[in-house]
Image 1: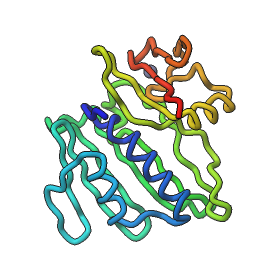
Image 2: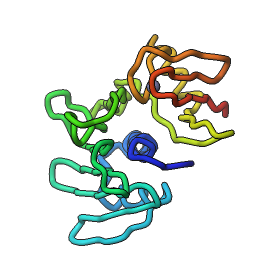
Image 3: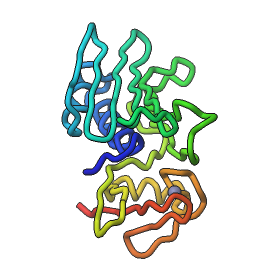
Image 4: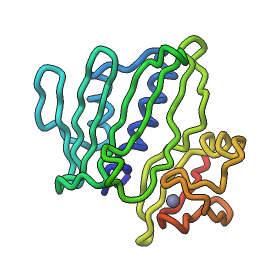
Length: 194
Ligand SMILES: [Zn+2]
């Protein structure tokens, strides 16, 4: 797994949180989030009353738990905020669903689009109500790929949006067998068969 920029942490983080909610049928605690962040290769740099700072070579993540929300702010370790993202986990009372959402921290300055579909999990039945295309990033022969599971691919296919890039939201994905390339953001998507 590579994490060169905020989105490369946000997507696998959202996926792990989604799996955790589906498995344990509750919103993960701040402690669960800390475990997930460390398992993704980040180092806990500082912890104070629930607030925690994590870092890796290229990104910083600030975990801010509160009663209603868990927020993870992810910024590039250079301090540049143009590609910063905010991941939020909360219970939406109107929808009665658990939501994991990834938003640009600075919409005015965000470079490029963000096409990430929120995770929506029914709070009664714990069914996944949306089709987020989440995975992790890998580098192969100099090219960067979002690697997704076959299960994720199947749900994506069923949604009928296979030509929409899961990262930037452009309508520009071109498929060649199990791999797709986005003409807009340049990132590939690879499906891993289990
Ligand atoms: Zn794209």
